Length: 230
Image 1 (spheres, rainbow, N blue to C red):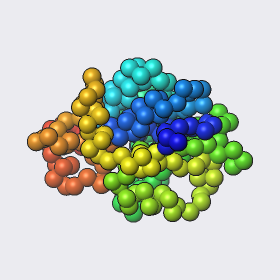
Image 2: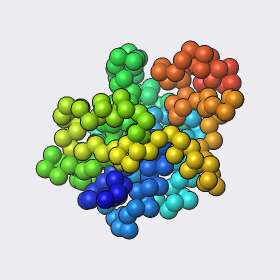
Image 3: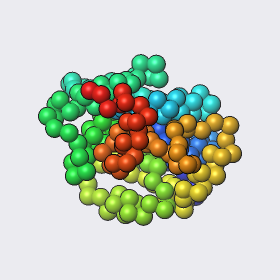
């Protein structure tokens, strides 16, 4: 059976990148009944504008509803937004840093955990489709050519978050690599329009992520100094 086939409620965690968009397209193509599909996009407020455009274009071109979510430092812990109202000035990230009183770093990557993973789980619990008794399948866009990431998820210990969802990696299961994703997008009438230098993407979805190399960060700031303000 196709690894993209759904069995019950399935969540596609859409990062806003080409790989997760490719995964979403495969899910749409391999399932006749999409009533149990939930597609989420967690916006940090520091995504490149092209990422937000791409998420919206995927939704419109493929006629698939995407739930836009953002972190909030309040009782619910998140807000439901859309393309028009989504933060573009780093508000969710700023709220989280103020709450934590320190910056995320390679050892403590609470930005990904709090701004994305926990926000999505809180939303799923709110709509009542994710419980310990009936966990949902959550598809994440990790490819077969990312063996360390695949192994990390396969051996992840149970946490309070994962009790409500079963992590599924259909791209890894299907043997999909970066070349497959690249070839797919070359054949499409639209694409993620992130800036490139010598054919390589200059920026990922988050503009000044601490996981980027120093030269890459300097290049991004040189191209748009406003991203380093605040």
